[in-house]
Image (cartoon, rainbow, N blue to C red; front, top):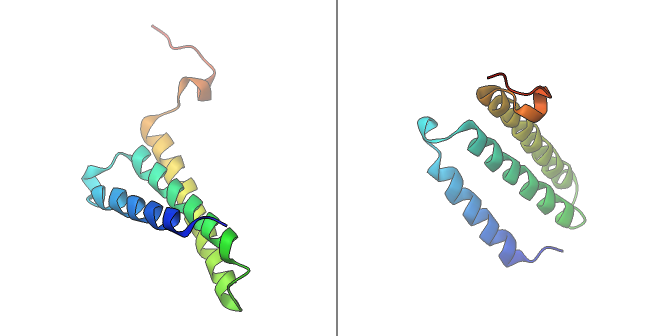
Length: 97
C-alpha cells in the first residue's frame, strides 16, 4: 500500500501546480495535459490501493472518477499534440529546408 504521507504530499504538490495554471492564458496545453495525466495516475493509484476498504457503490464511484480523469488526460494530450503540430517522430519524414 502507498504510504499515506507520500500521497498527501503528492496531492498538495499537484494542487499547487494546478492552481498556478488556473488562469486560461497561464498554461501551455502540454503543461495542462501533463498535470491531468499526473492527476489521473494519482487517482488510479488511490483507487487501486483502497478499493478493498471501500464498500458498496463507493469503490465503483472511485473507479469511475479515475476512468473519467484518464479520459480527460487523454483528451488534453490530443489537444496539446494538435496545438503543437506533429513531431518528427509522428510524421516519419525529415524536415524540408
